[in-house]
Length: 212
Image (cartoon, rainbow, N blue to C red; front, top):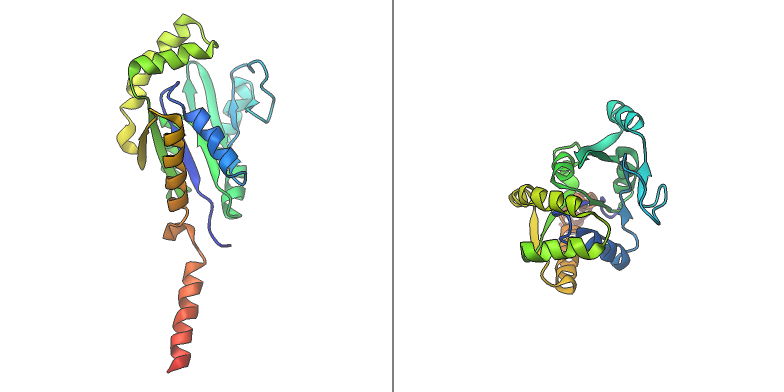
């Protein structure tokens, strides 16, 4: 195996652009695997089981947590979200990166898990609170009450920015995308992600010995 896969964590307050950036990152490198989360919320229009989410009842979700089948899980606005661990382990063991679109709670659990040393965590900030609210309203998906709740929650979410490896201010989507690609490209070359390096160094040392 040339390298191990990364667990790439993207977090942000709702509306800052992490989901759009995640889609662009997937388009840039189709070999990336997107971690499909399980959730207890109802499907939205156009969403399909196993594509956007695995839709589960609260009881079924709790059973997965109790059985140790979740890499991370959290409650957000009364609904449960979590990442099944088995497909993640299989992907990174075969050298494929896995992308996580999660909140700070999920990111924290992943970073402190047994797979934590293979994580790359990136927090996305909005350029302003006014722009954050504008983006939420432009979606046309949520009521005024839900938007107000998301705005209240965003202050707490933003306070967790120092916990991440990188922080990007999404003031220009294309520029932020370019910076994100640069980070991923560099982090794939970390020593911890290249298990074959030790064999390469042993081979080089053997060649030195043969020259003596």
